[in-house]
Image (cartoon, rainbow, N blue to C red; front, side, top):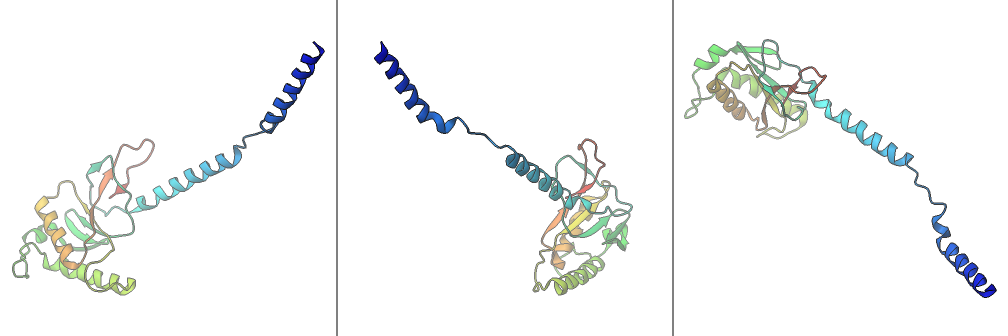
Length: 184
């Protein structure tokens, strides 16, 4: 029996030698938690950057529960008046009855086209973009009581001026604890 005691001790010694590398293993969670905190911080800070677009005075935006944040862009406001970047261009009534001076393009609003082309030219000059379509987005903030035929004419005029990236902004709702903000 003394031999079986020695054999048992030898087996235990081999087994403990085999598994000794697993005895002092620790899982350090601090770097993992730091990584997750960094990810959450960057996600929250980058998600709110685009939501700072000012709403044009006099425009009541329609509502939406889903939307992507807007980025730096030129803004057209359509309410009683049509304004570009906060400057009044003309009344909505004048725009609705304006006759196009472009042959075969009855939807173009000449006075708005002139202002948008001026803005497009200055954007091209600053950004160094060639003639043609602009990469700079154009946001349209239309009052919820606005007629859609006027919206169509404004969008058509914006495309004629060179703005190909046109977005429609709505009032964002459904976020608990947050005030409504403009969103594309």
